[in-house]
Image 1 (cartoon, rainbow, N blue to C red):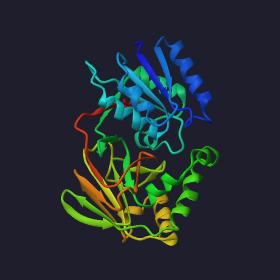
Image 2: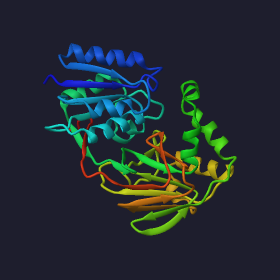
Image 3: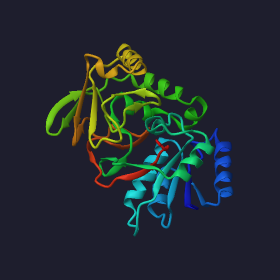
Image 4: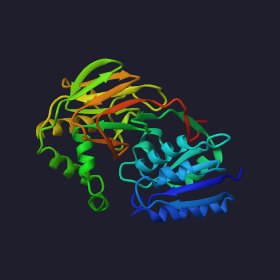
Length: 294
């Protein structure tokens, strides 16, 4: 089947990997697909491109997790007639958490095989203050570190840029955030509300979460400071963060986070919005292209 494919490319996320994109586009055209390519120039462009895209069978987000985030948010804001196009992901970003979460390949030829197979899985995104997210949203050290990362530093250092940003953020004592989960009040120093198991790439944040589920999992870390951050980091790498005595994980359908007004919010690897935050699950699922299990 020859598809009508829109590729939304984030040149910043794909700065070091443009050769992979060129190979992928060449393969698509050689396979007979009808391909359009749109590049983003600033935050919000991918959302607008997806929001106004019509007549496509498939949209490929070629970038990082933030590119997927905007693409999905735009698709769900599109008042198209007919079925929603499937979303594919060519990972060109720093962490590419979605690729780890869904077991997606990085190689263009493997992605081409996925397109030809056409297998999808339905994913209901989360919604935070009317903005959809695919993976997670957070407040606290996690969000402050993301907010402190400069794009130039990220291009030079990759994932290490977040480590340095987190060290700078540790200089300021974090507030205590109030968290309501399905009406039950709790508190934490850092809060991550996730739809996904993975975090930061291959690391398991909480094993009970997953995009195939319809709920939210709230990870609340209650300690602060350098030693706490190091301990949390090691536990995350070992897949044991959820087992620490000062970490609480709760499942729910509706979450509210309150803290200092204007405190940054991290969403799928980018700073998107500020507190306070109201989080729920989107009713409309999005079909994501996945590898065949047959």
